[in-house]
Image 1 (cartoon, rainbow, N blue to C red):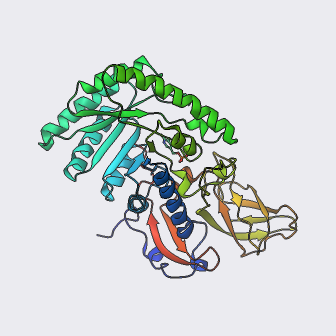
Image 2 (image 1 turned 45 degrees about the horizontal axis):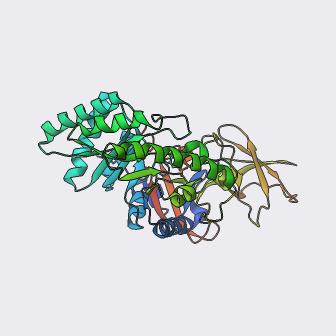
Image 3 (image 1 turned 45 degrees about the vertical axis):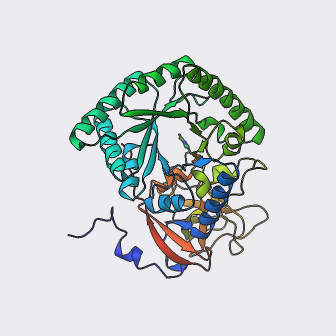
Length: 398
Ligand SMILES: Cc1ncc(COP(=O)(O)O)c(C=O)c1O
């Protein structure tokens, strides 16, 4: 039987390996592996310096091969947001996976419990977040059912999520969290692993001061909640959270023990628009859309990458400035087209065949639009294709 394109890169893509970047057809999602590895090294160094565990978010790259690189670089494992992402990572050989999100549907929890048992049999560990007593009850039921059919006694790590300012999932800091901790501890197949205190809204606050203030308030919420839990004689082993925008604050807090940041690896245009905190490692753009000019007029040109090539929820892509093209601005041209106009002091309108590199506004949903990433080394102009990175968890939304 022919392997499906979902499980293997197509023949023509595999044939690209070793060839020059010029051979990559457009539009294509391209990873600059040199830049990605530098970002990875900087993150590993940052975590080491601050004595932090890091479990980077794989919802960003959705690639088991990249997750394995992260673990080789020192990550404890990966975070994911969905059961299906966890399944994809486990199938790709990752053994420490944290579903940093609430799962409540019984049929999904049956999958979570089955995965917890499978990973435990491989000496790994699955973890999950909860924010309701009903969620705890259903998780415990699913774990008990799976235990009966698996014949082994796996234990799942459970983090109580508190809402530290995002207004998304999570119980209010304080007593509600304590009650959940006690509910978890009633079930032998669940282990209370700590608190999840992720502040999503803080990530793109533009100034470093705003982000410091937001995480400063989150830290107070965590301290207050932790004190109440510990007053009941229960240790809080780990506080987990942080994204690329705020990670320096969590790392400096002395309260958080684990960083979940994911986007640092590819560094999209939206994150680049943040004022950089002096303590933040200098992450580089590593994810690009290679696109080609297909039409050129007096004042603008048109490239072959539109909204089907990149997500626009965090703004339109930026154009990488190269000597060949000068500074360009990207404007909305619809699903399949991008309008390019000279910007800054540049007067040159791109010509037919010119190659233009876009920096996506938001890496996570951009990756989810593609089946593969073309991994290149040696630079965008002169480099060559090193490997094809399959996006294993593309469309893994359940
Ligand atoms: C729970 C959670 N943790 C961590 C992250 C990682 O953040 P980032 O990719 O912005 O670094 C996210 C991103 O949305 C998240 O939802």
